Length: 185
Image 1 (cartoon, rainbow, N blue to C red):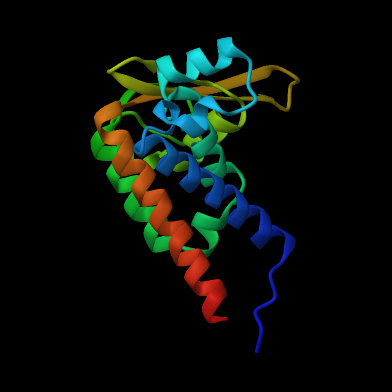
Image 2: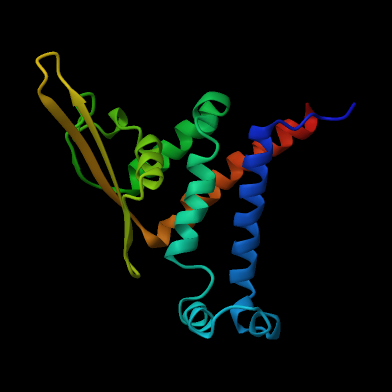
């Protein structure tokens, strides 16, 4: 029996494979190779890529987009145990700067769904980096109350860059389980 790959599967797989390719190209320092020199890119772009490397802030954002945004609610719906573990990891590793979300408590981090906020942050390009320091996620929600008054809720938190790889690996493990599940179905 041949597994049927849906359009959603296809998008998840292709974005994930592209992330893996970028990761491997960065690890082998492709930007220092003869093949890189032969690419048909403007010289300024080639030099910039040589200066910053393939594994940079831009590729980190693309990887997070592929791992958090493209699969929509995949982690929460199909992989609740993994979702819980990733949230537990984030709760122990992030620095919470603020949350004004009504249902969240800055004194009880278990009330915060960090994956959800990281996903929204990446989806709306509300992410910033402190070189050799941390990545900060910012999420904001604006709603109207019954009286027509605008209510704004927001959160910001930072993950040390030396823990970013662990976060990425945990997201990657979910994708691998997703792929394995599709292969076995």
